[in-house]
Amino acid sequence: MLGEFGMSQCHQEALKKHRVILAKQLVPGELLQHLLAADILTDEMVEKIMSNGTTYSQNVELLSLLPKRGPSAFKEFCLALVETKQEHLEHMIQMQAKFKKQISDLPLPVQEENGHRPKRARKDVAMEFSLDSGDGPVPHFVQPCTDGFYQKLHRQAYRMQSLPRGQALILSNTDFDTNVTELDPRPGGKEDESTLCHLFTELSFQVTLICNKSSQDMKNILVQFSRHKDHQSADACIVALLSHGIEGAVYGVDGELLKLDDVFSFFDNASSPNLQNKPKMFFIQACRGEMPDVGVDQLDGSERAESPGCEQRDAGISKPQKPRLPTQSDMICGYASLKGTAALRNTKQGSWFVQALNIVFCQRAKDRHVADMLVEVNALIKSREGYAPGTEFHRCKEMSEFTSSLCKDLYLFPGHPQANS
Image (cartoon, rainbow, N blue to C red):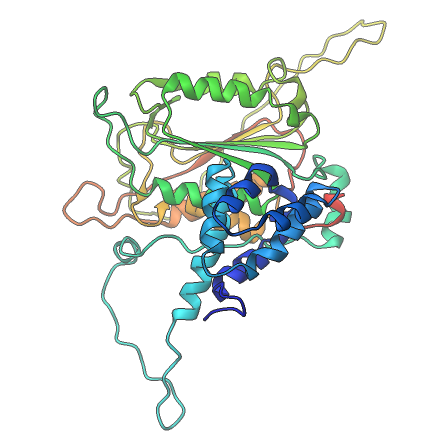
């Protein structure tokens, strides 16, 4: 179905759905020149857009013009986003357009003469097997929190009011250099990239996606990102690493390892002062060993563990001391798998861990803090079971986990207007 001026309805709705995010995050300068070169905009249109006083106003003017610029406007806009290093916004609107097209292409329900729908034929196909025959993940959308929830909890939680909330970096390796390493490609990795770009953008983070880098390049990028000047005005930070891995490290495309302890040190209170006392979220989608978790049959029973603690305090301090911080604090890290075990990935839908993150954060960020959401992610992962008859992965399991040095509850308060002030 074409709109009044030729842009398809699903493309118009994708731009409309994310109009506010696009207006806030688009960097128009070079983008406009690409659209001008592609004959989507005229010189007069570019001049009119740039005459607006603020970047936000310029973006609003551009988004008002695009749907009227013909059937190729959406495609050229997406190409321009990629060319100007705004891939996360391109991912976001492409996934929305794809979702809308899938919905519009669904056949209308057939009714029999008595008004009842005919029963569908039952397919005896295991769920995990059938998932792999799909054509990619369907995007979920983050549900906004209510004003009452924000007013009740924001004073006792980490501050979460900046817009964007902070910077999010996704480092993803899917294609490895066969000249120097025997590491296999990671089919399904691109779906993880799209899913996380969409999720973090919906959570109001400024997303940077960088793909297929060597270990040293990854290290350099992370160091540079940890020193990003925009951390000073932001309230949080996200780092996602998607690659092959072993316990305590992930691989670059050159087959060399990047130690996770080094990654965390780049963002500690000494190395990244602009992030002191601010929450830093890490998500590691990588194996932590080669052994598949074969699982065990469940038995009834309960288990309780008690860990007595002790605290030794300094005494005799007679004058106030300058506040000090531990070297590392205010971090939370979600791992796809337990130590020594393999992480599982669906070649069409993406990894189990990223799928679970997306589902839980979209549904529960409105009323759960991050640690509680990662508990729910664990529960989703625990419930899944592999389907691969005749292989070691048949009926295999995965178990995610997280570690935390957070000192307050970390609520993301998605979509709340006061949190955006």
